[in-house]
Length: 428
Image 1: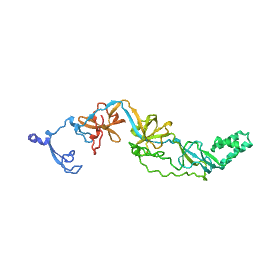
Image 2: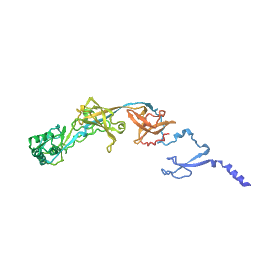
Image 3: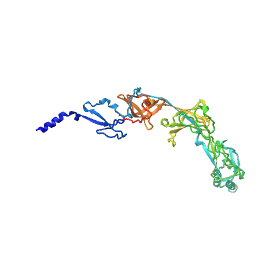
Image 4: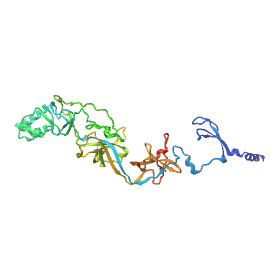
């Protein structure tokens, strides 16, 4: 009978023990809280006691929970905010480039038959030649035999038109022209030294010599190094030049008079620069908005008053190893063949967009693999990921992640310090 009273008396005499308690925390890491003394598992410091009365425990209102977030997810700041705008934007893309060769107009001249070079009529590399101009005379037993076969048929079997046609065709396969075959048929005499003519216009280059270089234009505001048939300097253009070591002295021809050549051996190359390309290095963002046929205006750095209106001929569908720029190629019209290989050029493309959502470029933070903006919510800024599209001067198109009512920081850089590691919030 007395035992229940004693238990009740004990409970009434010590109410504080049930509603109070002592916990232990780390001075350096207050998130570490334990019910008994010990060491901090992070830094090893001794835990210090902290006494808390349950009846006086601090409670946090629901509308202040946004303040108790990791510092790499939210930022408290008082900076200017903006909202995205929907509009059409007319932009202009400008990129540097250089005039280079049309690789489709580089030809090789091989020996169609074996023999000995008797005389050369081209003396040095880059010597201009015309179609039909004599390149060399050659003595060839194979060619002499083919001529004699035709002469024999004409003299002893003139009625056999099929064999005569085959003999003439054989001479054509060996490189003889119609005029040369007609001369042989008329004179009935074989030529022991047979002239070979150029089938192309351009300038002749030894096959062991590389085509005059055109140094590729670098990205950004840099221009391109000079090379080839033009001698440019950065001082003349006001642009930075991608410097390259000077080319070695051009060697002479490897083909010489008196040497023997074999059938199929490449003797010369002919490069035609009547039609040339303008090549540009364009950022991946800009290249995504370009395609074959896009109008482009070319401006020559050395001739500011000269401009050419043409269209994009090719957008390279891949990136070179180690580069993040796509190559864009423009074919210069035939009437503008005064452009010299190696000449610096600037391309400009005017682009209009459909109605879209745009924000200032300063409001977007590029993290490399993604882009974020800082959304203002309940007085704090929270990074959210967005998908960007076109860029125009100081504006960036937002394709996904924002709406016209979302309030964001006008300058995302103000909310990031040098040691920040941004954790993007769930954009909901």
